[in-house]
Image (cartoon, rainbow, N blue to C red; front, side):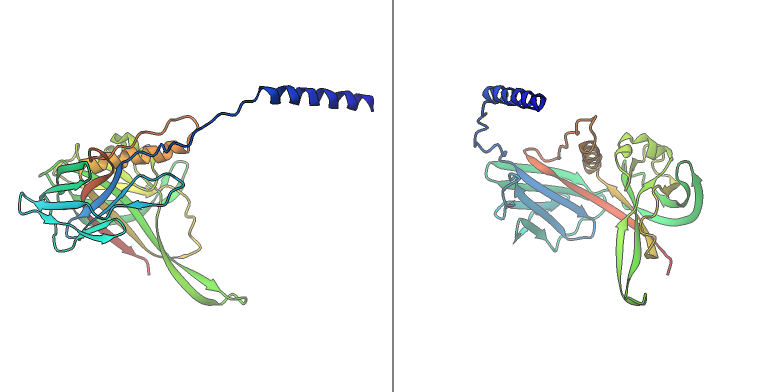
Length: 302
């Protein structure tokens, strides 16, 4: 009993000594949230032009939207048209359409922030065909593989994003195992590829759900690129309805932003790397403004 008594006395003295060395640190209550706008606009050819605009808010504050900015757009140095505020930080220009290779100018002002920037719409892209088969890949095994045929435009230097979507039907069953209801879900699946344009972009190591590449080694030529599903099919319990291959031709600034964003998200989950700083393309703002064109090919399994 005396042994435990002395141990208890020693622990009490130790804790008392430690507590006497502790000081309260005043962290202060000053708000460190920067006063910056956040701008997001991804404009697709032949689609309505939309923008989301807000301000940086602290993690404990509600979302801050901006509804009284002046945003003007003109195409090929034509007459500027003003975007209409819809509320909740959203703006739209429903009657104006951009086309491949148009020069688009964005001009907006809010408070002391004024931005004037121009981008060119990427060239049109057409998927000419898709071959499907299975291949054996190391560390993966037998996996669905796709050979995509498309013609690259020689008019511009092009930068692409490739992804694969899968639609499946999931059934709800009663206690007897009979189907009583169903729901269709579409989701992006993990893909990889060993083509030279894919390997040239080192940022592809930071993402599994898309492949980003440029046309430096094949500009203006017709090409067929192979890629394959790189992860076990976690949704195979559902009935496979279709697979949808999408290639987006995006402007170079959006391409660079997407690469940095993928690296940042991956490095956030790493204990050995500091997350890459993600920079937008609008001076004095967070977020990004980008232009794109796309085509898709649907493989029906029904």
